[in-house]
Image 1: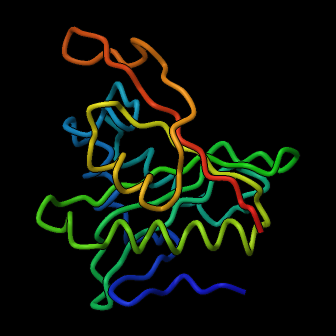
Image 2: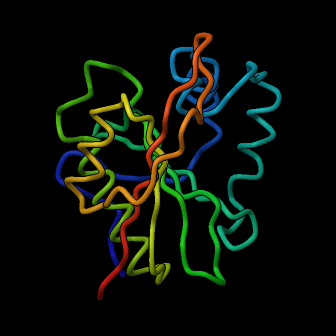
Length: 175
């Protein structure tokens, strides 16, 4: 069994107390491009989502975890989505909320913990992610973890009245 605890952060399940944190993230228009969000979310909808957060990844096909420091401050979110048990794969998404917490190894440590958990505990064969070609920080993060670019989706994201390309990256568990 792999732990979800690292040196500077740990990954934990969603709690009802995360309502404001998640509401702030989901309603931050500056990240809607990466989350494919089009409209704001109400506190009511997020509260309902949190009430269902205890459900198993095999049922809801998603596992969303909070990235926390050891002072119990929520720093971001990381999740497995489109969980596909039959084909043993899932997508990965990550967000460190505040810019002052970025480029400090938090995302790297969270990704390391999640990848190990997915491959060891969930016995997944592969993980993938979708990253806009101009998101150099995320591309570097995932490529440093061993994810390989396997495709380019041209004109995939419409943002600020223009289209952008998006890379698909994949990590296959060789063990």
